[in-house]
Amino acid sequence: LTPAEVAELRAAFPYFSLPAREDGRTVAYLDAAATSQRPGAVLDAERTFLETANSAVHRGTSGAVGAATAAFEGARAAVAEFVGAGSPDQIVWAENATDALNLVALGIGEANAGLGVEGSDRYLLGAGDEILVTEAEHHANLIPWQRLATKTGATFRYIPVRPDGTWTIDDARAAITPRTRIVAFAHVSNVTGYVAPVAEVVELAGAVGAVTVLDACQSVPHIPVDFAALGVDFAAFSGHKMLGPNGIGVLYGRPEALAALPPARTGGSAITRVTMEAAEFMPPPLRFEPGTQPVSQVVGLGAAIAFSRTVGMERAAAREHELVERLVEGITATPGLRLLGPADPAQRVALAAVSVDGLHAHDVGQFLDEQGILVRVGHHCAQPLHRALGITSSTRASVHLTTTEDEIDRFLDALRGAQRYFGVEVAA
Ligand code: PMP
Image 1 (cartoon, protein in one colour):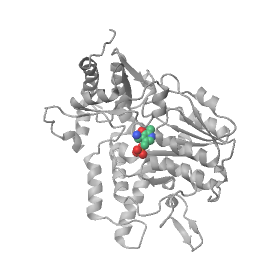
Image 2: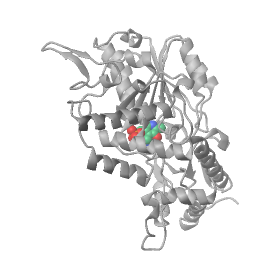
Image 3: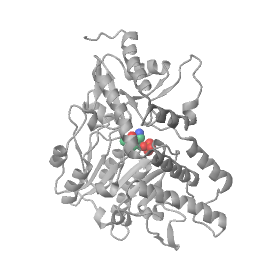
Image 4: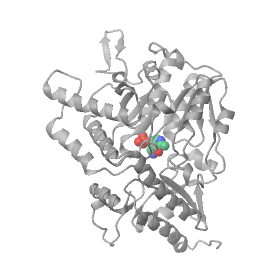
């Protein structure tokens, strides 16, 4: 993307047209990994839907319901195409990625509690069976699996990270055993930005008949993703990190994987027949979507995908890669900054977290905030990873297709400014 194209893109986002703060500084938004800003087209799509076509979907026979249902299902088809799902039926609406990951873990729990559907045997876990995650997981892809292990008596295991916070296919090979039943891991780490060798892990997992669950929260917004090509059974991501609305997330599933998964939540509109004794459920995806759906959010997510397509994910990924290179080079060139994750920018996507020697991340964050630089400080919902790296918190800058070189430079300058301000001694 040329500077003119980036400027044009930024102009499409109301947030980036905000006036400067009272101190004359404009805000450098470097926190897209937490949540992205929305283009006007996404905000307009939600508003227009609510103003002109709002109604519950999949209920009743009126024309209005038909139009809303068409918009709702059209967005599902758009998501399916965007992530390489062969059919819209492989796309389940959830609240966010956290919810989508829980749908899988809780659903497997239901199968193990005797509440299975046809084919759920594949999800039965017993003593000696193993659930495998990595030490780098976001809590959303960690705690649900810990609890599933406790519920079922399965053994909870993890692939430990190396000193830079990454893990390799050899580490995965060493951890996968004939008893591995589930392998859950992030496509891109939200702390190190490290890109996992997904297809290779899927192959190892497949060889022992294990189910694979991919946390794709930090990949889908930034790089072209094709879940069918990667071969994962399940994948989860959030609308609000990919230019879309809050309150909408996606669970992708291979047809056979979804068909055998029991619903973790039940209620109206997900059923075929209910008696006073029992219920029969619809096939996926509606089986997993009881209750009144978040229709305007779904419509907004459809608009976010349309917007991303106008840029093209290949181009967006190439542009963001340039920005990440600049970020990583700046961090590694500055004494007293410790880069978390791979030193080679080719191994990472969209973000970089640092630990500033001698400073707590919250002090760094406060200093950056005063400079108008918005980043994320803390453990980023990855406490075990930080513990493995010997720290409790870090400062993370994340980029998106609207980020500018100037914003990256302001961040790097401000880190050096924080070192000076707090009087940190750095070896030259
Ligand atoms: N996994 C990863 C890697 C993430 O970065 C996040 C968001 N920080 C989540 C899961 C959870 O996403 P959400 O809060 O939208 O459910």
